[in-house]
Length: 429
Image 1 (cartoon, helix red, strand yellow):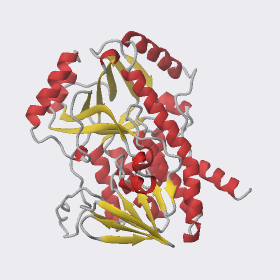
Image 2: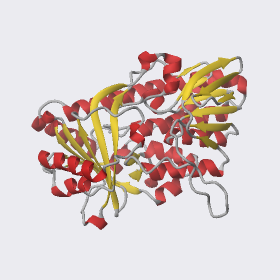
Image 3: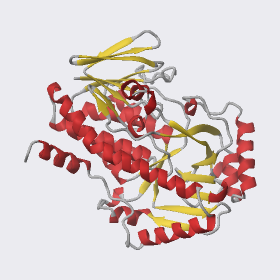
Image 4: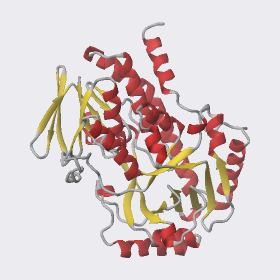
């Protein structure tokens, strides 16, 4: 079988690597119009690089399990920073609340000490690891391919791109993000993502070079009543990302998240001045002021879908369940999708079983996607609604319960077991 994967971001690339493990060939297509990276010293082309944009991503145990299955865990861990706790503060840095994420993950069912701490890694660095792995596996990636048409026939699906090129495969996987063209083709324009009115501005800064001290690996600074939030993510002892959320900036055009601001000094000064006016600690303000790149990211929410497939077309990652990024569940849920799809194809290897694979995938992932999106929306309500004092007190109580094992923070998603159970029920065992 051959799969056409529309979208070569983190989840799209991971999907290609997963399919490769079970002998399914795939080709990646992305609308981003970039030139192939420079040739390696031996003359072979390297995997395409999608720019040095974006900030940090957090990978928790369920996602790390998928990376281990893909054979990439050690490579990722070598360039990532363990994040054993998450901290919340009032906007001025006072009233610290700390979640012991190692304990929470252990309580949730992860017994492997290596996987218990979450990790922080630059999105661009993680993506490069994925794309280099795709290159080693012989998986092709074509850029400048904006999808304009999908046609499903008996036994195949054809795609047409804006540049006039076409491709045909046994099935199509939409991994083209929250603005997924694949999703709109199969579920209509009513399924498109909804702008929340919030813009995230992500800066990346060299800590030691700018004499900035940052203790926490993951922290949130909140002023709920005024809808003010700043987040910091430490990816190494030398580098970190800072994100400020605003509600008064114009909505970027679709795809702008790939383009860093052109006028960096002006934009970093503007954002740092906003943060200063909010009263954030000086070291946090300086992170934005000294950022060497800044990327905008409009925050969207995706209406819950009743299923994640139609015919021979399947949605994965943000294309299926794009959500407001307040609980760190977006990429985690997307990589869980990849793990589930991989396990299903391990069991159903023939083209005639494709319908079973896709139906079981939706059966397993729709409830999980809806739950993750609901948790993210709830977290957004907590961050941007109600009294600051009351909200901080309620958060403190909740984290106390988690830290002392009185409440389970989350449960590790054991995707091989979940897939095995669903297949057993299907086959009547």
